[in-house]
Length: 576
Image (cartoon, rainbow, N blue to C red; front, side, top):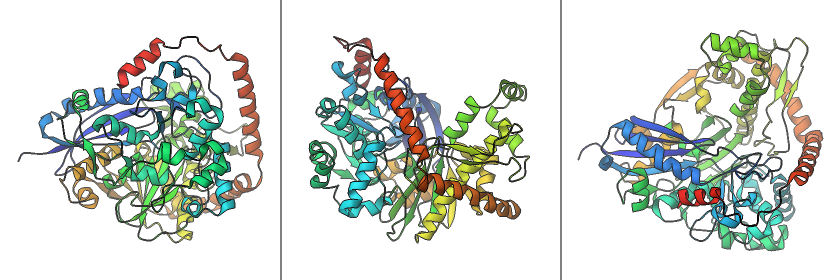
């Protein structure tokens, strides 16, 4: 038998990436990226209808375009014979939810719902369901629901129940037409193999599935009478084990991708969790941080512990046979990008262009010259809310210590440090709960920023190992595809053969770590004051939300009489 290959496809926040991987050693032979044509809808729908505060939607047809464009392009770049491909695996951002009909058609592709926001995909960073999340948490605590502790005592606005409850309460007529409330990770697998299988990762971390059961009908009814049947009628579905096959590639999907009909399609997965085998971080105590627009922290443990503010503890959620833990930060690269876009003067852009570097690289180079604390600032990294350990997306960013002498690189460094401090809070919280972090492994796009990674090592006071691959999630999906195809015995074996990591790529400096201990104490004081005490940030968010809602009402267009628009036709055609 000749060389065998697998394909991994990573559906990120702004684009989808495909990679062709050799089964024997994990060599990445070809890759391609397809940006989503509609990107993130956070201000208006394609037809122009304005959205409220903290909304983030997507168009599902964009995901299918990735299969049609990125996969064939990656195959062409690899030069391999498509007949040698023995499996395909996929991963997705989470929690990203698709409301569909019984056959999987997204509601936004129905002509009469093309102008309805709640008919579209709710992206992971859709945070407009925070009021629903607050009530879900409060009611669970009041009733003593046993599953609440598995999520650190808080349910996030990013997750399935909160987003579904928002649809019910704000658009009951749309909710009534939802026949499946589907994680995008499972929806894309459904498109590939024609079978709807829930993946164990999303179901456990985002769908509140614990010990074989979802929250009860009685609990859901107490949230809203119309919510009583949300689990049996819209959420519950057979759950597939990670690394197993969900089905076989259909002729239609084979025509899209250029892959052989009938090859195994791996059960879906979440982009962060699927990266663990690619970084050879599948053993207990190895915390993997996938650092990009946001950061997700995942690690395995042999025993179950209750970690305050964690995103979940799920048996088999990362690697079968172990307890998988998740935490995260809602904004990291996004926070730095915001500052570069909005806080940097034109003179810095010209300087970066003259030096042949990005503005990020220029600011990193300038900031790296400073001693710890030289800028006189401390920041909170909550521009997209706090995912761990406070689990509150009503929180917001803060920079303290600004003066007329403050320069753009000062704020940039303070924001980098704030994200590192946020990671340290997570690491220390896990350790205090009896889940010690013995190795910190980093993956994702931010690993390329050596200044940022050194700050993290100095703040954490521990070496940081780094993934070898620049396509961690896609490689992880390919690894799961190899297991689903029977090429490796299990995920551990596949990770050993196909993954790769550089140990201790960044080592902390003792003097800088000691200096950061002092600055971290200031961060913790702000963290606890605004995160656990003063509700000022929540009050400001409420004011903003009310003002935006009023503006939306004043500018809302009249409902179209016949919304079977070109947009609706195009969306339906590209996805079916």
